[in-house]
Amino acid sequence: MNRLLIVRHGQTAWNIEGRIQGSTDIDLDATGVAQAAEAAPELAAYEPTRIISSDLRRALDTARPVAELTGIEIELDKRLRERAYGPWEGLTQREIAEQFPEEHRRWRAQEPLQHPEIETWGDLHRRTGEAVRDMVESGVEGTAIVVCHGGSARQIVGGVLGFDEASASSLSGMDNAHWAELRRMRSGKWRLFGYNLGVPAPHTIGQSPLAKGQQEVR
Image (cartoon, rainbow, N blue to C red):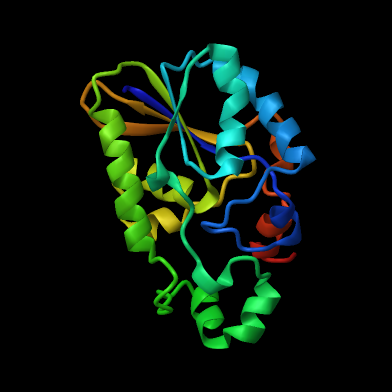
């Protein structure tokens, strides 16, 4: 592969409610289905040769419209799943703060979480890195569309660029049904050609409830 498009899935009800999804298998909502359909022609224009998706429904259903346009069969890879958040899944930030105050403090301070059921950024970085390494080293040339999740997308982009897990975590989360474009140079190095790309106008980037909640209020 010499080009990777790292796509975040479309919107879900839990995205709007600000609930942690993690490895929970949540469907797209009506807006998410429309976002996937809207993004599909733009993604198909890259003329992909492979489409690889997380096996969770919200990612797979985001990949389906572009697969139907291109006639390419979707390959599933569970290593592309979102970070597993264990007992936090299904909770809002307020509920996490109430039920897990110390871990929530560590999370807000960007310190490593210590709950044994919550996957570390390092583990997420390693498993997504293994998945992408297998794609890049495959005998298939051209462009691969990789459909995954907010946290896994950041670790994939950072990993391809040579960032460690902490540096990759400093990337902003992409909006729903948006993507990053990475290209391999003749030198063999990868370069980021675009981040948080999508169909809506640029001024709408970062307007999701979760993204707005993470930003400094001015």
